[in-house]
Structure formats: C-alpha cells, structure tokens
Length: 209
Image 1 (cartoon, one colour):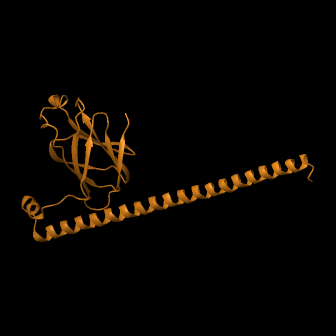
Image 2 (cartoon, rainbow, N blue to C red):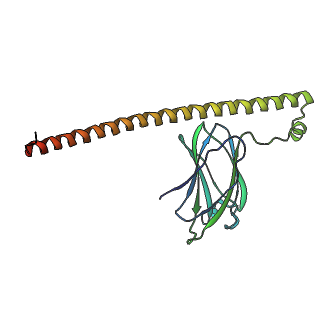
C-alpha cells in the first residue's frame, strides 16, 4: 500500500489548518519534527457518519483512522468522529508520521479532512485548578512559574535539537557535494585522456606525426 506524504515542519505554537481528501487504500501522512511534548490534533471529518460508542460496532464503521509513528514505533492510534480532538504525548524528539487512512469499505468515497495541529503544554484554567485543589494564591503562583519554566525548557531542548539536525543535514550535503565535484573532475579527466588517445592514434594512422 503506497503512502502519500504531505511534508511540513511543526514549529512552536499552532500551524495553519490543512485541508485534504483521503481515499480508500490511499492514506496521507504528515511528516513532522516534534519535540518531546504533548501534541493536540484538532480535526473535522464531515463526510463520515457518527462514530458508534460500542467498539464492536466501530469495526464496521466507515470513517478515518489516525496512526502516529516515531522512530521508536507506534505512538498513538484512534478513530475519528465527525469533529473532535486527539491528544498524545510523544516518546522523544525527532521525526513523527501522522497517517490518516480510511477504515472500512468506503466504495470509492472521498473523505474531506481538516486538521489543525499544535504542540506544547495544554491550556490550563488556573482559577478552576485552584478551586479544585484548594490552592492558595502563593501555591497557584508557584504552579504557574513551574509551568512556564517547563515551557521554556521544552522550547530550549526543541531548538537545540533542530540546530543539531540542521548542522547534520548541512554537513551531509557538503560531503555529498564534495564527492560529486571529485567525480565530475575524474569524469572530465577520463574523457580528456580518451580523446587524446584517439587523436594520437588518428594522427599516427594518417602518418601525420
């Protein structure tokens, strides 16, 4: 089964929404660089029917399925509703594939999909949190500071990882370019030697030299 890849790099914060159509046996995958963090996938799949609550009935339901893979294996899998949100935590920094496919027999139907992907700590209602856990104003401030420190630390790790990957890509590109130049020079030298040999034999056969 061939996979069609839509490639974009996920930066800090939300990205603009993506709109695609998915067919049976033609899954579409989004290749993303994601740091170790919580990822939120907001989606709309208006062409499918409501997802049955019973897992047994879901096996015969025609709709979209999301699978997320990292270099370490599958991270997440879930069936979509007509509209909703997935949340999962990545296993580490690096490339992740978010693959949407049609589950069930769609008889050639196209499924429109609108997705909006963000990463980072989810929104926290600190007032509700303080009421629920009976936190004092000082404890709430400490919680906010800890959350901000965690956000900054995650972003620093993410950008450090991006810089390392960019350097590795640049070094690899330069190395390949150098070898390509050497091969081109070697090829031109070989052609020159062959031409000189041909001309020498030609002049000798004609008794010009």
